[in-house]
Image (cartoon, rainbow, N blue to C red; front, side):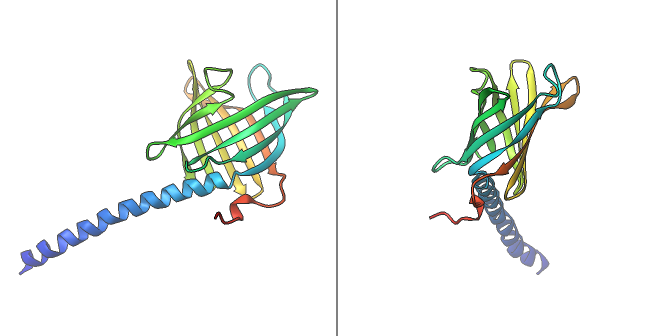
Length: 184
């Protein structure tokens, strides 16, 4: 009797456990979509180079965040100003495969920037991307502590440590948090 019960219940338990895996993946995919939608809109704020040759250089940035239609990802496009000089700056990333992201920062390594070679949405308020150019490796992290602020940090690997190089504190400058608007 016990073996009959186990043989009848075990397949049901395995089936139930297996059916929750797609639900978890669907929930993670929706979390990613919602995170990137929360970045839509206009952002502005100060930044600073915190290490390296230009340490202490302060700048001000203006970006427009958008998400690609039918894909999971985002683009932050705009520029940063130091004095009278403005440097165009952008980051574009899209999901490739189930959970990996690829893209470019400042035109990628083919231009004057870095390639985004991987990464993931950590939770509803944080994403981390791996960045690379030749022997330079690092991470770009974006945290969204609330609907109207975003903190972006770019760090590079020096020996065995990750050293923050660029930090930006951006505030939403459009009138409403886009993440709170339902899509059609």
